[in-house]
Amino acid sequence: MSGYDIKQFLDRLVWLVGSPSFGAIYPALHALLRDELVSVETQTCDSKPPRKIYTITETGESALDEWLHQPLVSGASTRAFVMRLILVSRLSHDALAALLRQRRNQVAEQYATLNPLTREPSGTADRSQYLASDYGLAIASAELAWLDGLLETLSGRPLAEGAWASQPMTEETGKGQ
Amino acid sequence: MSGYDIKQFLDRLVWLVGSPSFGAIYPALHALLRDELVSVETQTCDSKPPRKIYTITETGESALDEWLHQPLVSGASTRAFVMRLILVSRLSHDALAALLRQRRNQVAEQYATLNPLTREPSGTADRSQYLASDYGLAIASAELAWLDGLLETLSGRPLAEGAWASQPMTEETGKGQ
DNA sequence: TCACTCATGTAATTGGTTACATGATTAG
DNA sequence: CTAATCATGTAACCAATTACATGAGTGA
Image (tube, rainbow over all chains, first blue to last red; front, side):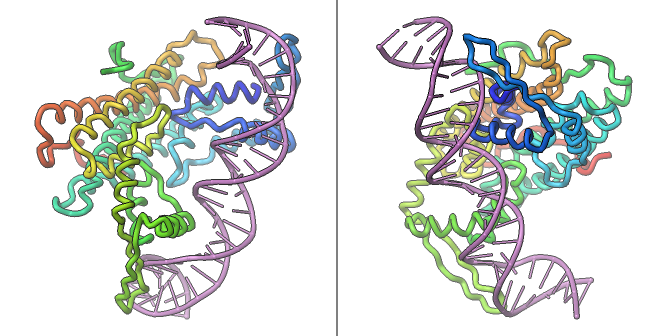
């Protein structure tokens, strides 16, 4: 991909992982090139500005795989998890299952942290956290359900092609109100 | 609250809003003091290190309320939403409803952006986004459900004290597996 | 003609973390 | 006696955004 492509790719997933600016992407690409984790190829289709297509090298692939297989440390961001999800095709069946279990533990931990905040004695100044905690619990439950569903599918069949889908929603969800 | 208190408060909600380091908190507090948005009071209960308790001033309150009532701009972070949720007690019934509707539109937008990615023609290089998008859709649906539930409760009764609660989960959710 | 998309890049500035310094108290 | 908690603060450093520069093609 080119720097421009990367930005567009990330923009679509901006909600999940965020999208860095070009001022971050291009220097990062230059650093990867310097460390020989990627290689470049300039594509000059005229009537269009030249594009620099970056391709991962073998060194890059092993570095990437090393990162991918690093267990999710406690306190790791959602971003770290979703990034691995995006690169799931590089993961073995077992490695994916391990990843999902790691995430499950973290979300369950967060659920446990948030839960007491909603049930605190009323009248406390901490009542202000109530709505926020309730929101967090709702999100956490949904994620736990998703993870459990996937984990179950994974343990059942040996990863049947395209068997991944969670709750289908009726159309017209978009642009409510 | 003191800087230390703020950190502890944010640490419990770290999953939702993140928690800045002391190196960020103390300078921020000094800046707020300089701008007279807060005032200090040093509490020297001996046998304990002295604590600096910061209190919001009237200028600070109006600045805060102004920020709170600013509509969620397109592309606003979840953090911006949850921060407002934490300070919900400063919001009128209508302002809260407006906030929830703004968030609903944004989440629905994200849902709409993510949805086509899961149904793309198979064999595409973009298949890699499949799992991540499915994850995003699951989270988005859950949030839409939560927002709709609260919005309904809000329109029904005039905000009965403590009527906010979503799906209760059976205990033993924590530390699964 | 004006604005926008494509496409790459650099420099100034900002905002944050990490690491350090200080010092008393409490628990193992 | 050591480690951890309480409590505040500063300085070095790093990573990122913002803003800018460049330039050609496309569509209103």
